[in-house]
Amino acid sequence: MALATGANHTAQRAEPPQRPPRRVLVWARTDRRDANAAAAQACEWLAERGVEVLRAPAGDTPGTLSSASGAAMLARADLALIFGGDGAVVSAARRSAPWGTPVIGVNYGTFGFLALIEANELHAGLEALLAGDYEIDQRLMLAAGIGNASRYVAANDVVIHAAEPGRMLELVVRLGDEPVVDLPADGLILATPTGSTAYNLSAGGPVVMPTLAAMVMTPICPHTLAARPLLLGGESQLSIEVLARPRLSQRAIVTLDGQISFDLE
Image (cartoon, rainbow, N blue to C red):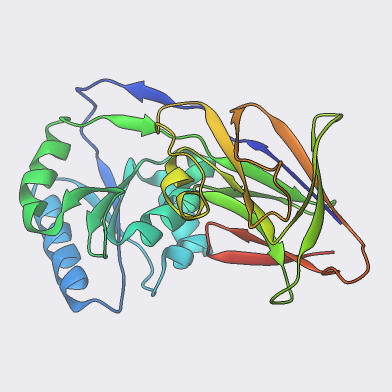
């Protein structure tokens, strides 16, 4: 069983002023009436000012953006306005990556670390967008290939963990053709700078400046004194193999951004 992962984008910063958007995709989480009401107000406000509004298919998560109609809207939009929490922003960023569509979060979640606009500052935020008074951060993302299957993209992290609770994995990590570590652990986190403040931080990994082209490899409960988090270059290409060992887990699961999971067979 093997997983390959590496950088999908490098980090850059574009300085304002930006070109005012002409087409804006709007998505809101369906389980929040206040988020839906605010999204409706934003759609009306933008339309009154000559902006073409693309109202994305409704859903509890931005997974609806993966539908044919959602993907077509992302391809056309100058930016995506996401009314939700950090998880919704991460999900939308992952789905917008093929077109490079900027994602802007309006905070209707718990923390709102990734939200550019607070809910009570919506109109001021929209006015700034139409004035081109904003910056675009191109964040590094991870591309992961599972065996010979398709490649997947992660905005926060790629996590490998045992399928059976209470069982360890035996992982062999290589950087290119060079072995890095033979690791007995509950799992392994590969995080972007954006995701370094998520699961990686809880597991003892370092916080990385979001503009750095780097990724973090952090073991989850390693059964060794030698394993420590490792900061790698953003263009690093890693391969991870799960070894079959007696009394250890024979099955591993790969999870992208804490939202999408696959069996690693």
